[in-house]
Amino acid sequence: MRILTRDLGAHEGKEITLKGWVDTRRDHGKLIFIDFRDWTGLAQVVFMPKNKELHEKASKLRSEWVIELKGTVQRRPAGLENPKMASGSYEIMATGLEIYSEANTPPLEVTSDGLTIGEEVRMKYRYLDLRRPRIQKNLRTRAKVFQLIRSFLSGKDFVEIETPLLSKSTPEGSRDFLVPSRVHPGMFYALPQSPQQYKQLLMVGGMDRYFQMAKCLRDEDSRGDRQPEFTQLDMEMSFVKREDVMAVNEELLIKLVKEMYPEKKIQEIPFPHITYKEAMEKYGSDRPDIRKDKNDPNLLAFCWVIDFPFFEKTDEGTWTFTHNPFSAPKPEFMDDLLAQRNIENILTTQYDIVLNGIEVGGGSIRNHRSEGLKSVFRVMGYEDARIERNFGHMLEAFDFGAPPHGGIAWGMDRFMMLMEGEPNIREVIAFPKTGDGTDLMMNGPSEIPVEQLREQHIQVIKTKN
Image 1 (cartoon, one colour):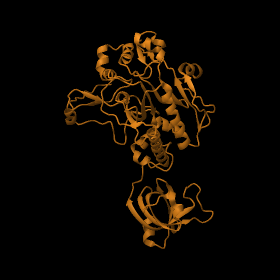
Image 2 (cartoon, one colour):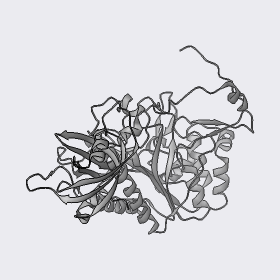
Image 3 (cartoon, rainbow, N blue to C red):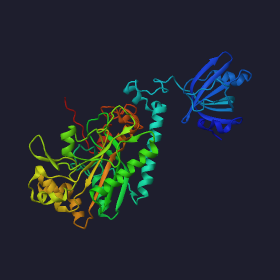
Image 4 (cartoon, rainbow, N blue to C red):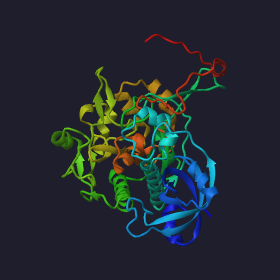
């Protein structure tokens, strides 16, 4: 049976089997030492010269070879323990060795944190970069965080539901990624920027409480905390007010910190509520960093920002939404919205959760009546025909009886980046794109053969920049 290096102490004096990688090899005269690595850590293995065949086989080992080891676990001599290893009080006297696969010399070393290695090399050889202990820790912690979230929400009667990836193109703030339809020439699907409309339709369908770890895709420029595709915790609740949604999410965030990051301290519980107006006047930002000590890396200053303006002017002088066109105004401004008046002063039910000066989530109470949603798009200058063409399915659904509902979405990559103290979200994503949205490992995006384009009824016209 395979044993992990973290469990060596429980097998002292016994012969065990380890399976993993050669981290390093050292020849000390007649003795050969290797640092063996699996996903739980390192262990020192000793090959003695008396077993000539095994010793000779061990002499050929190189870094990153994949092997199976048999050996007896024993305590290291007093004074020779290695405090830098979790298993540093033990070593393994090798009795057997099987080489599963040899390895070429890696184009990058994988034992350091990797932060000084160029992004292009790390992304091209991401499958090697993933062996790095720091990245392993990030991804394994991410999985545990997701598991805790699922358990918490399921315990509060939320239902995890997957929504489609092939959808309809609707204006939601960013460019859509488009997918041509082979069976409907000239027609296109859009990959979802978020499950926004689907989760509201689930509320119309009576699901009451929904969540999912949703893949979202937006054709926008990348940056340190943004990728063309990203993961968000998406949720929606029926028969709630703003404070109900905020309370559930605040409870979840506190639980996450206490159970997953006990070394970190939340500055203030309950989280402060700051209006947009107060945030701009006091901090000059709607994502205020309210930490009392910005030099403390374990200090977490959460706050809610509320009472945002619903609309803002575009460069062309027309109105657009500040956050989400599906939001409802605060109740006292609903008459203004329906009458198309006092536009600049209408406040929305939007609420953002901010952590140390970075927005990690945002949501709102939604318009659940068709006239309210129509009015939002009319303020933005949409004619009724266009509203019907883009959002007729939502309007029709609301007219069959929709409960009041609201929700929120967290940017999980951004949240994990902050919690793990990483400089950008690529450090907490298994296979990220580069800063310009390129997949160097798979060489994407790539050209498509003409025959395949014809099958999709597409002709590429190249233009000069």
